[in-house]
Structure formats: C-alpha cells, structure tokens
Length: 274
Image 1 (cartoon, rainbow, N blue to C red):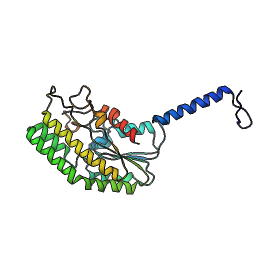
Image 2 (cartoon, rainbow, N blue to C red):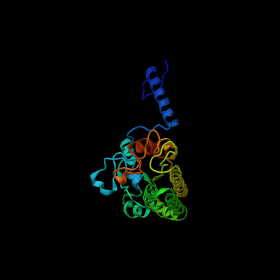
Image 3 (tube, rainbow, N blue to C red):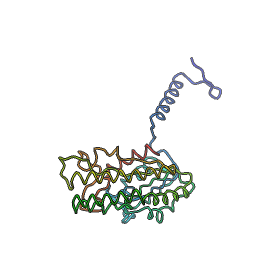
Image 4 (cartoon, rainbow, N blue to C red):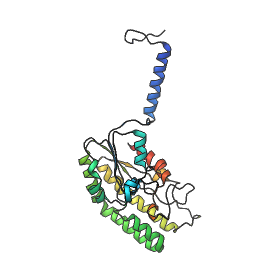
C-alpha cells in the first residue's frame, strides 16, 4: 500500500491513482492548448469595424442600430465561452480607425484584460472598391484595387499607429489581438459568379496588402495578429462551403463573414491568440 500524508490520514491507492490521472489530463491540456469552457477572465472590450461587429452574421441586436452587432459575431461567442468579468461590445459597422478612436475607447482602462480590434478596411475604401468591381468591370476594378493598396501602404500605417497607441495607453495591462481580413474569393475558372478571375485575384491581393500592413504595425506595439486567411482557405466565395457572403439583397451584408465565418474562422483564430 502506498501511503501519502494528508492532514494526518492516508490516501488510498484508488484516490492516489485518480489524482495522478487528473494531473496527467491537466498536463495534456496545457500541452495541447486546451481552454476550458466558461473560464472566468478579466474585462474584455471588443473594438472595430463590421468584421468585428458581425455584419453579415445576422440577428443584429436592436440596441446596436446601424452598428449591426450580432450575437453570432466572434466577440460575443468568445465572451459566452469564457465568461469575462465584464464585456463591452462596441465594434460598429462602417467604422474607420478614427471612428474607433472617437467612439469606442471609453471602456478601456488599466483593468482591461483583453482587447480585440479589426480596423483599416474602411479607411482603404473597401466598400467602394467592391462596388466598383461588381458594377464597372475588370479595368475599373483593377484601378480601384491599386488605389486601395497604395493607400494601405502609404497612409494606413500612420492611422493604425494613432489607434494602437491609444489602445495601449488606455489599456496598458491588456492582451491586444488585432484581427485581419480574409480572402473573399476562391480563384476557380469554373465559377463564373459576379466578376472575372482577374478582379478576384486583385481583390485578394488587396487583402494581403492590408493584412501585411496591419500585422507589421500591430507587432510594433506588441499586439498579436490574428491572420484568418489560412483558416478561410476553401471557404471563400466560389468554394464548396462559403463562409463569406456574396452580393445580398441586404447590401450592407455583402462581402462579410457569415455566422460560420465567425464561429469557425474568426473565433478559433482568436482562441489561438488570446
């Protein structure tokens, strides 16, 4: 019999075996990055544009108005899984970097534990680029994309610096995760939907440019970058399983992740970075 001190008593072999097995399971959980559901965390603040608010994921809360915050959005899903001590969901559809600075930073403070943010796509004119590409043909699309890429390379870094510096100053003790943008299209010549392959490739390359700029500036502030392009591969428009909306009657939902894009794309990316 194995005897182990326990406040003057002994631990029976069965109890010792159970404790050892539990310790092994805990160690395995740490090794493989397991995260227990409903683990309590500190205050969480979700900032950003439509890709954070859940535009395209449906079931928008009436109180969010034109910000179109969805219970299917990745910030809401993360909060449900982790039960933070407080949750401020202030991301808003259409927000540019200056809008985030002006309207969304009020919930940040020294106690904030986690901040997520996506911003930059609207600064580069994402909505107008897509409108041009769908309505005006390939040549106009390529011009619009090149203009957006030039803006992202030359002007977006300073705007991101203004945003990121204020996030860091207001929430100095927080873990900050900056989420990027996915490719919208699977390049497949058998899919003739909407626009040419040349336009689709150009739009995807614009996402690459913007993500590259965001990742570089985020890194300079010590923020984690959540790159969703890999996990969205084979789930773009024209794939067999779309996680991105194409043109919709509700125009504001077009070219945004749907509910699966948030739950199976953005949420796992956030879990991997938080």
